[in-house]
Length: 92
Image: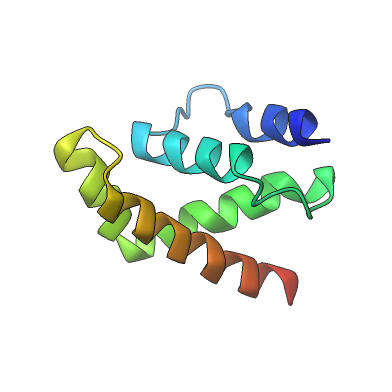
């Protein structure tokens, strides 16, 4: 169940590694249960959608990239991005 979803989010395309903030965001969403209600086949699509949301938002990416730490501000921004992505994702 959760382990299968975590395995899906950890898969990265060859020669296209994710940045540290992107990896942290995906792992955070997996270990904190935000993916539990998704089908395993939808995890990759959700991950791509979340990364697109984070790229547009920049608050989270900037907070983690500038400090190299997962601060309270970064966590709040990430939770908002996950909620926003999930709302849009479930209506697709």
